[in-house]
Amino acid sequence: MTKNIFDTIANHYDTPDRQALAAIIREEVVKYFPVNTNQKVLLDYGGGTGLVSLPFADAFKELIIADAAETMLKMAEEKINTANLKNVRTIHADASVSFPTVKADVILVSLVLLHIPDTETILKKLYELLAPEGQLMIVDFDKNDRINHPKVHNGFDQQELHQKLKAAGFSSVTSHTFHHGEKLFMHQDASLFLATGKKA
Image (cartoon, rainbow, N blue to C red; front, top):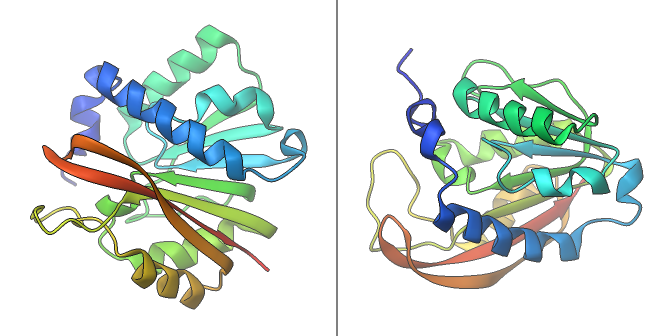
């Protein structure tokens, strides 16, 4: 198996630029969290070092950070131990090999979908991980024709993603663009959207 690129960059992943972007993402997604989060489980799928989700730990009953890159998870675990967060755990989850068997009330997929070739299959698997009436939250880039890379999607058309979410079983599907930035995606100006869907 080839070494995960995120294993290679883990030690210098939490750059000031990424920290600033994570704060922008948190500010947006928190507006759409369900009520009574202190009784709910949040799964940060592809959560890496916990850059986006760890500040939410106190708001949820449990936070699970899942990622395919073990070195990223080790960095997350160092943060968890340093902050003495008893309700946070990590799981190694490589969708190409196996899928976690946890159940979550909220699943956050932040800047992860663009790295997964088969969008339809991953959405169906995420649907299965949700508890009844659970909520999926996807943050990613709007489709950008200036991007061309063999290993990532060049963003997503929101209406096309709506159809894929509905085909995977999600209802109450919504999305909106919430941030524009310079050199945000492969050194190109880009915009971020938040898409949400619920499990009936």
